[in-house]
Length: 113
Image (cartoon, rainbow, N blue to C red; front, side, top):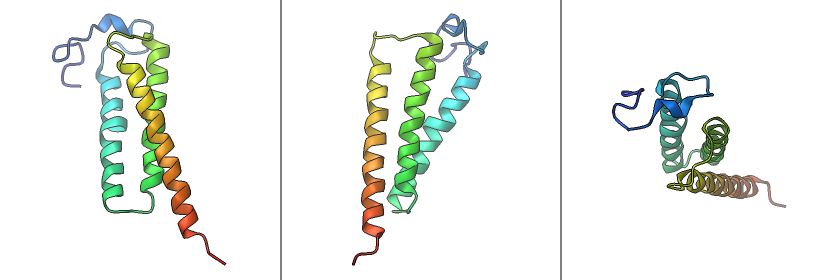
């Protein structure tokens, strides 16, 4: 966000052609909020063993998967380096682990006969 035209991280603004963005400010703000603050909040909830921590984990994973899907649709897939593939797999792993955690928590909270 501090260098939306590639001043800090050398990303060409031309990579955004075909997208609704003229520079990286809005994508950076969304990225910072959804994939910076969101995971931090989920981690704090998990550390405090809050009951919504499993759901927050799933939402963080889904956000990462959706972000990458939109990014690939807008700017295309790049395999050099394969960061999009790595983060897509990471997002799917986070969703899977969060879902398992939710199911385990739901099972633990269920009344036992």
